[in-house]
Image (cartoon, rainbow, N blue to C red; front, top):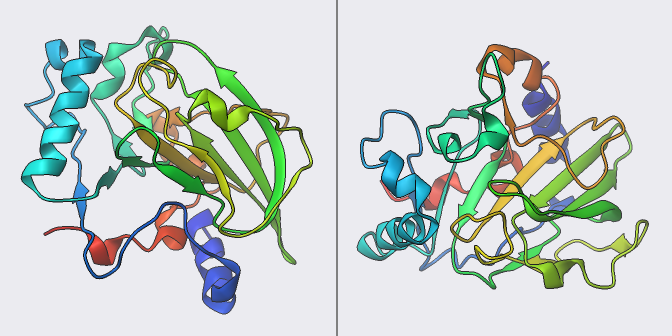
Length: 234
């Protein structure tokens, strides 16, 4: 059983346990499926190297398609990580995105989709990294789930300490701007894990394509909680 299958089975029997990660009007809002794969020829090296131009491209995708957010990314083999040496170690580069990105304006509120506690937090302040990051721990009857929120504003970390109790749908932060979020267009990296070992305030959000099947045993598809598919513009 994959991590996605395990979480999906639990969610099916406990729907009331889970809430929202971002605000979304089910009547009016639409989501744009943002293609950041190697096959998207619009993602030139010049565009990816220029954070302002990259941000303008994302904003144009939203405006032209009249969508509130752009989304996508779980187990997506991406081109965008060529922009930072953080992902380009010797040997196989990291290109497999392990969470879901929700692209929208800086300052967009972020909520805890389930009750839990602050496990850890950090400002991963490197080019191409998460920037301000929060990890929540959710203890269910049958297993523990961890949720990671990356590319937040620095204000999101103010006043935090490990162990703070968080309620479902409680605001926990906001999207950061490129100056503070790792030099990315404003967005939330939302990722789920069943086990994070000794990690604190950080956990890999981009992995090796050769280890995809291994990741699938520990990292569920966030769509199980988000339920975004019905709002995606086709």
